[in-house]
Length: 423
Image 1 (cartoon, rainbow, N blue to C red):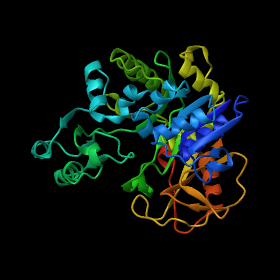
Image 2: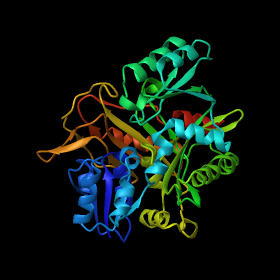
Image 3: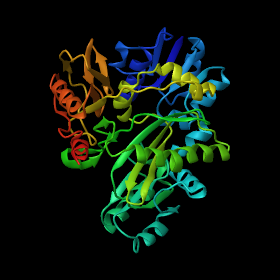
C-alpha cells in the first residue's frame, strides 16, 4: 500500500515508524515531514494546512491510505476532502473535529450529556468576562475557544493574572480569532492522565494511559509548552478508574457525538483530572497527542495500519489491539529559550542509541546533509523497559548521546510517576 501521513512533527515520526512495521506498507510519504522523518519516509514540501495541495498530491501518487495527524487540517476538513477524492483516510471529519476545534462546543456537549467536567461560563466580549472575574474563585482557568497550538489555556493564580489572560486573548488577539470567545472554567485539582483511544464511532478501545509534563522547567515550573516529555503507563490510572472512565466518560462521549450527528472516527484523546469526586474531562483532542504518542505507540504490539483501517472501515470490534506489558519514557530535547524565542540552524550530533530506544524528530531539517535544529521542540528520546525506573534511566542515558548548541531538557521526567508507584 502507498501511505501518506499529513504532518511534520515528533508525533508524525512516531506514527510513521510504527506504520513502517506493517507488511502492507510499501511506501510512506510525509507532508511536509522533516529532516529526521526523511530517513523513514519520502517527504514532500507541502504544508499540512494546504488541503487542496494535499489532495492533489494524494491523487497524483495514487495513495491508498492517508493518516491526517495534526489538529488544524482535521478542523479544516482534510479528511472530508480526501474522502471526496476517493481516498480512504484515518481521522475525524470536520464536524467531528469540532470536539477539539471549539472548547465551547465540547463543554456544552459534556453539559448536555452529563459527562463529568469542570463548571464553566462562556464569554463573547472582554467586558463581561472581566466583570465575572471580580467575584469568581481563584485559581481559575481561562481557555481560548479555538485551536492555539496547545497553548490557549492559562491557569491564573490571581484575579490580576486572569484579567491579563482575558485581555491578551480577547483584546490583544494573542491567538487570533481563536480568542474571540473564551471559556472561564473552575480550577480542578488531582493527578492528570492522558488516554488516547481508537474509535470507529461504535467501538472505543483505549490505549495505554500516559502522563505528560507541560511546564518548561524541572519541578513543573516555567512556561507551558507543547509537552517536555511523557511516561506510560500512568500509575494513577488504576483498573478501577479505567472502568469508571469507560462507563462515565469514554462511551458517553462517542454516543453523544453520534447523537449530535458527528460520528467520531479516528483517535480521540481524553485529557482527564482525577479529582476527589472522580475522573473529569479537562479537554478533548481530535487526534494523537504529542508527546504522548511517542510513549504510547512504541508499546503497541498490533499492526497500527490494520488497526487504523479497521477504524476507517467501522470494524474495530473485530480487530485485536494489543499493547506490551512494559513501560516507556520520552524526554523531549528543546532549543534553548523554548517556548519563547530560540535559535535555529544548530548542528545536531547523535551517537549510537541503545536497542530499546527510538528517537522521534520534531523540529530539525536537513541542510548540507547535516541535521540542524529548526523548531522549539527538536526531538523526543523514548526508551521502553520492563519497569518505569528502567525506562527513565535508559531514556536519560541516551539523551546524553545527543548534542546541539543550547540544548534544553527537563531532568525530572517521570519523577512524579515514580513517587506515585511507591505509594
